[in-house]
Amino acid sequence: MRTLARDIAEQVGKPTTIQGWLHKKRLLGGLAFILVRDRSGVVQVVVEDKDEVEKLRGLQIGTVLEVSGDVTKEDRAPGGAEIHEPKLNVLVPVTDEPPIEIDKPISHKSENLDTLLDYRPLTLRNLQEKAIFKVQATVLKAFREFFADNDFTEINSPKLLAEATEGGAETFKLDYFGKTATLAQSAQFYKQMMVGVFERVFETNPTYRAEPSATTRHMTEYITIDAEIGLIEFEELMNYAGDCLAYIIKTVQSECAQELKSWNVQSFTLPESGKDIPRLTITEIHELFLQATKEDHTGEDDLAPAEEKWICEHAKKNLNSEAVFVVGWPAKSKTFKFYHRANEQDPELADRADLLFRGVEITTLSMRENRYDKLIEQLKANGGDPDSAGYAPLLSAYKYGMPPHGGWGWGLERTVQRILGLNNVKEATLFPRDINRLSP
RNA sequence: GGGCCCGUGGUGUAGUUGGCCUAACACGCCUCCCUGUCACGGAGGAGAUCGCCGGUUCGAAUCCGGUCGGGCCCGCCA
Image 1: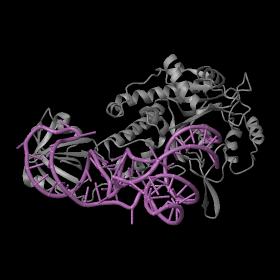
Image 2: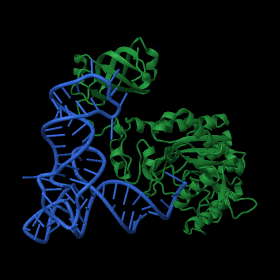
Image 3: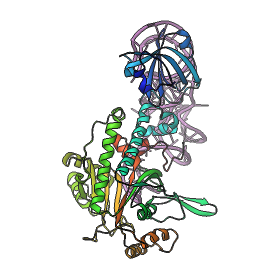
Image 4: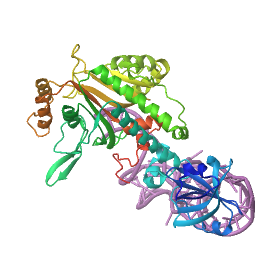
């Protein structure tokens, strides 16, 4: 019967067997300490028998072991207990020296990211690296809990599409039995169609962008948490997104305390309720930024990366929130897509917001134009053909009844990146894909 | 796509105004010593034609040109 590392203290006084990877050897002559890592953590094993120590000769970190012995309460041991008088059984010997050390923090300096990512199958075994993806899994779990609490249904939309439709971003093209298929740049149209079915839907799937971006924020494949909500209005939609962020942070704080500590993440400055996250218009932010830095972006349709960073620091200090909703997006702009909805009172503005968190845009949300005729009009104005195979399915959903609705696309990796204070979104991605990297 | 920067043992770095470099340091690895380590400690050892190609020079890790790989910022984009 196998015991996990996290349960070792409960086994005190009992013969116990653990299984896992040799994580660290400390040979002190007549006494050796070895650390064995399993899915739950690390156990210290004290080896005094020379024959047992000798079994480890020539074996490298990564060797898979089964260790049977007596668990002893020991305050000097990590976790308060350790295994004594062990019998070591080598399940999978490793004799080649690993190319990278995994038992101490690995360099995350930008110029060393290549090494970190090239050896990803091994570097992920480092406990600090592993912690990033424990946090990611917890964020994803929190999303699902939030959606379940609010009566959403989870869906999965296709990623192979007949043609590029949404506009805005470049798509990947690939051969599809002699036809050209594209990889989905978002779940946009499908989640909208599904509003007509479930009213509230979400999905957590990869999305693909063929943009030649070389920044710390962009990848060609990333996970979006796509949500779409029927019978909602703009203010309410922002509140949902804010509540969702608050729930994610709360969940990570309670379930990943150890992981946050290992990345030296102390605390979060965030309102408990989404409605208390500050709303600032693009124009206001341009003005504040100009006053503070003398750098002028007034008149621009979008925020510069430096402004996104600055406004979050500003809001943390002055508005008690590291998250900010950026509103006041122009309706007459290339940032306005054909399915967006203009504001009823002020048609010059779009019912759209970006949610910035700790300096990075993590979510884009908007109300969608739900009136069939108006949508067709906007589509045509955008150069789209309503009769094409790319638009017809979406339009048929509209034709037969779409309520006012809105939703968001939320970057999972960016969220984890900012929670942990990582410099590059690729550090928060298991096997990142970017303009230069397609492997591992 | 534009600008700037970087490539030195397995890993992280120093050296880069040409000669003292027959390339240094730390970690890792190997051998030996060490019974409470937890970045264990100590002694010794192996391991790099300095990304690649060409040029300048008596002499190149160091200068020049090209090339390949990578990073950061901007743009695009989320």
